[in-house]
Image (cartoon, rainbow, N blue to C red; front, top):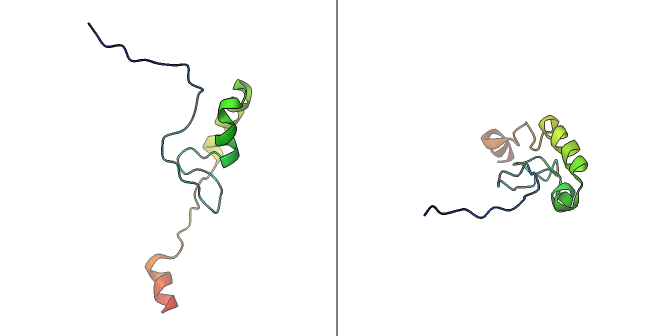
Length: 77
């Protein structure tokens, strides 16, 4: 007898389980949603979720520039 995995109707979500909110952008590095969007996601209408899903590819969740690394540390000394 094959095991059947229990499944439930999940709300479509872009979550990839890499949940870190960037302080500069206030967006999740994994899915590019804001804290407010993540919080309200399960209560949004399908149309609201679809609108946000369409916007996500155009968002930059993390800053593209580095904060300085070794060169910035050397300048402080």
